[in-house]
Amino acid sequence: MMYKISQRAAVLSPSLTLAIDSKAKQMKAEGQDVVGFGAGEPDFDTPQHIKDAAIKALNEGFTKYTPASGTPELRQAVADKLKRENGLTYKASQVIISCGGKHSCYNVILATCEEGDEVIIPAPYWLSYPEMVKLAGATPVIIQTSDRTEFKITAEQLRAAITPRTRLFILNSPSNPTGSIYTPEEIKALGDVCVEKGVLIMSDEIYEHLLYDGAQHKSVASFSQAHYEHTIIVHGFAKAWSMTGWRLGFCAAPEPIAKAIDAIQSHSTSNPTSFAQKGGLAALTGPQDHLPKWLEEFSKRRAYAFERLNRIPGVSCVNAKGAFYLFPNISGTGLKSTEFCAKLLEQEKVAAVPGIAFGADDYIRLSYATSMANIEKGLDRIEKFCIALKK
Ligand SMILES: *Cc1c(COP(=O)(O)O)cnc(C)c1O
Image (cartoon, rainbow, N blue to C red; front, side, top):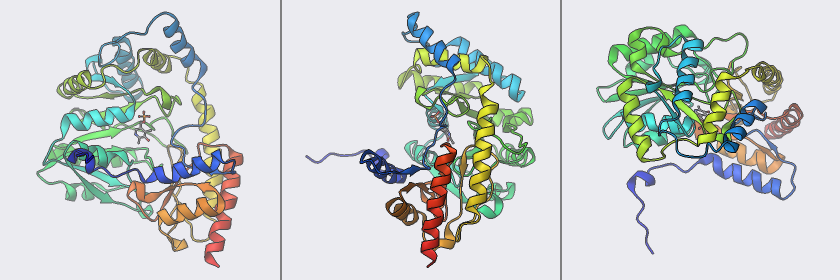
């Protein structure tokens, strides 16, 4: 039987991370002692009061459809959060609750982009952005960066990449995979260019709360009314509340875009899981005291890994100021990222994600969302591996 695969699906790149990930899982299942740096999620449990809220909702029979864009109370709680923490005024009707931040990103791109449109994405990028743009029929336009600029683009670079076809600019600060952040001044300058050129900004702020060394987060929407009108904020519960498996995220957008997303969602997924939304409500309105503890732990691991990586021959690493990733440059080892990661897994049983998956082949991504003992053991092995390469 010959199956015709749609052009839409056929143009997608298969996930490069998947091959290594499934190999690592298979090795673990065979009882091998694999150290995993691949995790894209916190290793902490969801705070208890959030779980309790979902359990209570289940027990009380909150198990039916909700409005497609989420419960009014959760949409209002998101609007309240955006006011309280970001100084931004949104009505509940401008907030759409979706099945994860990833789903929110996809909705935003589907609602704003089509065939002939260009979407500007700085690399290294979160690997799903370009594929989502392709699914919408639009064209990703990549701006390359390197560790020399802490993986950041300038306003001039953004301006130079804009054409009459540019529809959207994707901003992700703090960044997955690099952990780098733009300063408020830099974010304003990028926003200024988009306002001047009439380009929309999708600002993925899911790592907003995971900041180190006194770094500040400021949403691009907050600089002026014009910035606000050009911005769609994407966010979610996965990272700061460790709720990856709950599949709950949100976006906040100008009213006409929110309406379009509401329509898309009402005909595709309908509402995000009812009782997960009750957990999300508890996450936003309940105590936040888990966060300083997590940040302290992440910060210790980051400092240790950063220091160790920079002493490994052939490896150099700029420090990350946010998220839970480091993105070391491995070009001094003479290997590109796919070969580096495949050999590292085979020879030393360490799983890392090749940078090529994020559009940066001279780097690998290490997540420190794993125990300090694992980090120590894993770095010992990476060091041994790189020393052997030099011989
Ligand atoms: C984790 C992540 C998301 C959203 O993840 P969900 O699990 O879908 O909520 C969005 N953007 C980036 C950059 C991420 O790393």
